[in-house]
Image 1 (cartoon, one colour):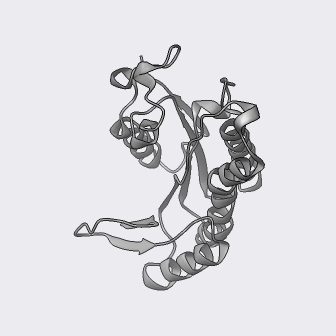
Image 2 (cartoon, one colour):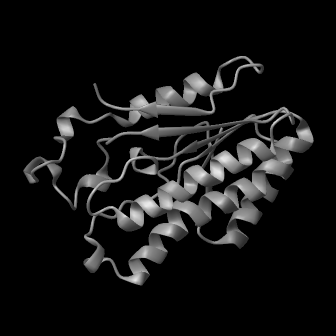
Length: 197
């Protein structure tokens, strides 16, 4: 199993590849290393992302560009680097992790939602483009998930926000990824919306 992030704590049994996915050259180098050392992967999970919560008037163009770079441009680069490899192998599962904000609008989400709606558009287009190749593409759109991304915003103290204790857990999203990845090759789950009860 290969893990990719800007930095990773060592974990036995994994091939860790540090990479900044907003840098297209690093994504290409990552794909080439994977191709050389392990061959076409069976499963690719495109999960890089960041979260911004700001009213429109407080969202600078630089903030907007940073959200699009991380949440959309990086996903495009990963897809462009890995999907042809999977297509050439005639198999594989490419799973993109989006957000509830890829199909529902929320206040203070202009930059984040724009990047996530764009991500869903990218997924839908690639789903059509790779249909019939043996490569299955899926989008998971989880609701609020209790991760460190919430720390700067303290939703427990903000009116109208779900409490962290009521949010999904990262393991819930991981279970959804595993569920999609372990369906038989003839089964496609193109979009899975996941939320707290």
